[in-house]
Length: 316
Ligand code: GUN
Image (cartoon, rainbow, N blue to C red):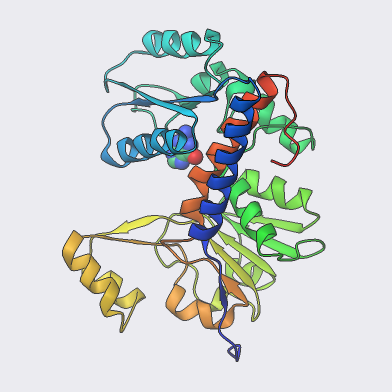
């Protein structure tokens, strides 16, 4: 059976704008109060177009809130010693509050040693083992921007989490695992599913809150969704096949026209057209979770800076 009312469409853009404005206000207050302007440096190795766009947009978003945002772009053939030197210099620079190493790195560089080299108190991605451990221990920590942004979205829409069954599909270090820890902190009962999970559809149908973070366009279908569930789509998949888009969004001339103009379209992990009628609330793609990641990164940068300046992060 299908819900008789339309789902609440959770507007990531509106929430992200509110978060950015709040960061801007706090930065202005910090500077007016004699504090130092927070600074983020986003490091990119190579020239992958999507990563270049992300890094530039992160630095620009910082500038818009009154924080300093810089990107450091290194050639694709940068060796490990050189990358280490750059990160060490940023670690040692007292004016730098946040360091972000854009992933993935080129194949010849193993990511983990570099993520561990970034000082934990400047690790605005929350990928350092110290921050990962602190998250699971419910201690104060910098936590990954995407799942933290999801919690912010749910809270700002007053969606009850306590005691509810959350099912996450995808066990990545960036989204699935930290999402599990953050939902556990909110007193959800958490199931973390992955590619080897048996009867995934049945697991997903038990969810009051279903988080899709798989990286496969339209993977979550009505068979995965309990009526009345809240569905959060973390997927950002670029489709270049028009027929695939038409199958996911039948009778949607707007989407097809946009595809024809750009030659591609971004879709989520959820088959939105078919799943939305079952849900009580759902995030769209685009305009949902994607917007929150950068907004939360700004919050993390401000938090790192306030702590480093010995100031309170209350209200963040
Ligand atoms: N690549 C994809 N997502 C992310 C992210 O959240 N942080 C970084 N540093 N790289 C990414």
